[in-house]
Length: 489
Image (cartoon, rainbow, N blue to C red; front, side, top):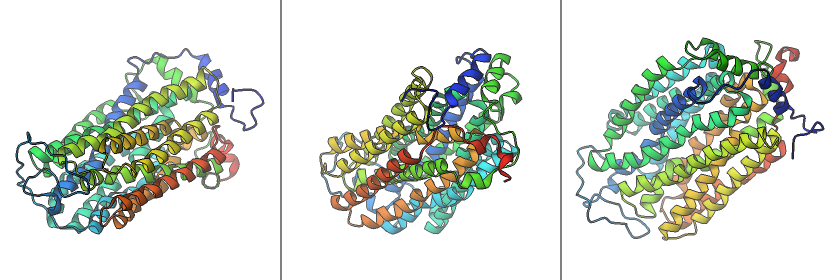
């Protein structure tokens, strides 16, 4: 497992990184431009995930079936958790009579747009620069979020259309950010920088779920979209003035940091401007990431879109309790993602573990662990403490994969990381499209047994993905990613 000169998998990149980085002193992290970018991008992913998940909570409050006279909870399988100290709610906003099938299509519609711009986002960010593509992608999502209440009043078809357009705008964000990190992240700091960056996605979920519940309670569900839309506008202004495509284009970066970043990456970037499409699409290590990403996202999106519904319809939590408890799994995921990023880089840099070993181990833990506890959650019955605990542990363990397959694109082809992320995220978006529809079709009666089936399906897919990645995953820069011209593509 330790790095050696006889590495049979050809994963020699950490030694290469070390020789490059030793030529220029490492630039301090505190106050650096690269960590400033990590924080700014983290706020950006906070925004995009807030805009993505707020409908999950608002949906509970948008339906006639969830608006009884008490205003606290709907009928559920388990006894409702009432809070007599809470005031009576008032709802000036409209509510709708959408059946479970319609709900599934509405919750999944975002991903029908999201899947369309994954590969184009990776290509365009590499060709024209990621800053403005990412910025305008988020801005368009913000605009359509602000139009969501109007679309809901016009009918479910209009709401689905608006959510599809939101997905189209948001689809470029991850590929663009990967393309940006390809130019900004020194190899031995990748796990740290990327987990800081993408922790915003988890925090967006953690904060937006309970906050959406409070907004629904004290105002009405329409303000969920107005409040988070306003936050998105503020972020866009910050991004426009503070983000830059590369260290060389940043006007305020120190010369020490600029040289440190560029020298550490110079032997990893392609010497050709041509994109080796044939080599990319036939790359076994890439397809290992595709399968792992698809499998992990099936569980992730199942919880992301349907956990508030499960909390309401099965466990009997009110809209306020629902948002808070639905956020706990993602808080655990955020904490584990940051810790795993620190540990992964420590194992690679200090302990000299091979990159491929670290990526595979973290992926296995981050996929098999969630599968086990997700299935266990289905057998807790009405023991809501145990149910919430198991769901939280399941999602928290999933955060470990943030330092596994989730950033492996930058290991195997940093020059084309945006394109690779676009490809894997295209496949990984499919669970968001079909998962909610299948889950709602299986849970028409909202029985515990029906939800167990949903959890079993997600767990089985997770296990398959972990096994496939363990077999096929790699950690070294692929030859076609460095010398693309030699392939004639």
